[in-house]
Each structure stands twice: as C-alpha cells, then as structure tokens.
Image (cartoon, rainbow, N blue to C red; front, side, top):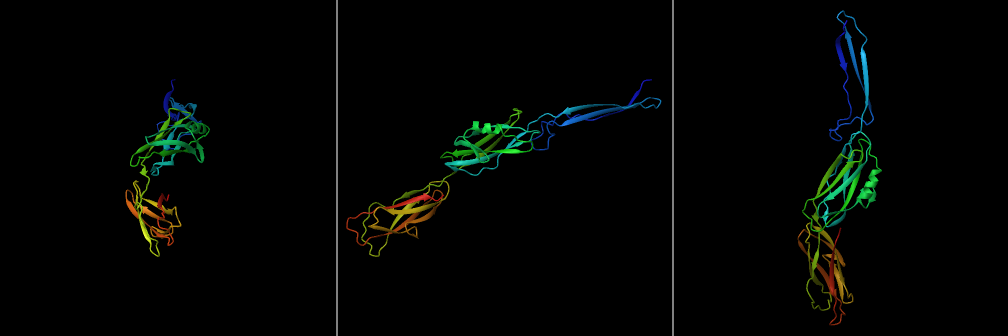
Length: 289
C-alpha cells in the first residue's frame, strides 16, 4: 500500500546575517553562531494507519559580515591661518564579529594634515596610525575614535574645505565607509598701528600733559581685543601717564572686523629736560588671545 503524504512542516533556514542591512540599524546574528534547522514529515494511509514521522536536521554556522560605519561630529570653526586644529572621526563596527580597520584621509586645498590621535596617543604619519589600528580590535557594536590634526593656511576665510576619512575592514576589505566634514574657516583678527606723527616739539610739562593719538586698524575678518603697551627709549625726558584711558604704560582696546580705532597715549616732558633732547614714543598692540 502506498503511503499518502498528509502534512509537511519545514523550519526556515538562516545561512548568514543580512549583509545589506544598514550598519548599526539592528543587532546582527553573532559570528560563529550555530543555527539548527529541522524538517519533519508525518503521514497516514487511506485506511487511517499512521506512521512514524520522518525528521531530518541540518546545522549551519554564521559567517563574518563586516559593517564599517564612519561618522564625524560637526567641526568647530577653525581660524585662517591656524595650527593644531582637531577633527574627530568615530569608526563604528556594525558587523557581527570583532574586526580591525585601516584608514586613509583626504584634505582640500588650504588644509594640511599634520598628525593623528587615538585617545591621547599621537601618531605623526598615516602609516604609524594604521599600524596602531591593526592592533586595535573593535568588537561588534563598539567603536574607535581617530582624531585628525590639521592646519589651515592663510587666506582661506569664507571657503568650504573638505576633510575626509575612509575606514576599511581588515577582515573584509570590500567593506568600507567614508565621512566628509566641510570646514568653514574664519579670518584671524589682525592689527596695524599708525603713528601719531613725526617729530614734534614739546616744552617741559610743568604740569601740562600732552597726547599722542595712534590709529589701530583690524584688517581681519573677526573682531579682536588687543593688549596695548606704550614705551619710550628715554625715560629721563618722557614719562607715560596713561594708555587709552588706563593709568600707566599699558591698556587694552577692542577693534571690530575691518574697523579702525584711535588710542590716546598721554605723557609728560620732564621739567629739567635739556633743549634739543629727544625721546621716542612707541605703542605696541598685541592680540589678547
């Protein structure tokens, strides 16, 4: 008598994690997980006789699937020119097993990469960084942060300068990701000082105070605060009373971007100064920060 197949139950077969899933979007099945799939068939004949179910199983082991994902926080606004700027890139392992990465970087014209960091450890070259990364195991779901150190050249204010990092899986080199940060430098505040005049004749003060007016110009793209220092090479003849309203030989002033500001230096001439004596008066302005 020929048995008649009545019912067939099959379990689904999962061979590997879904490789096309976005990195970090879901938790992948861990590498080396064993998945057992079982199929069972039961039947009876036309007379109602039942027979022992037939069961078969197959086990598969989940393989490795890389999931490199690079992100970079919004950068600070660097100055132009400036040095020692830092941009962090976070390299996430969204794959299903421990991995290592190698990186490469690109920078737009006006940016020069001068070094790299992992944590507080610095690396002078990309080769040194990749050697360190080769020994850095990134477990599934964790990350490593690489900081790129760079300089911005003069004259880059207002430009959009790309800085990019690409990370590639060591175990599965076909898997990589790139994050690009666009830097928008601003100009550094600058200053120039125009002297009050050439040589002027002054009588001994005898209580009279004189004023020398200097013009400060900030050609930079941002406002700045500047420390002021007045000096003379002949203190026996000339004494400084105040600088920009502050008693003594020092003071400060704020000058807007592209603006000018006058600064008065008040001084006296010694009562006993001999006729024909000379004394220069110099004002120096230095950026406060």
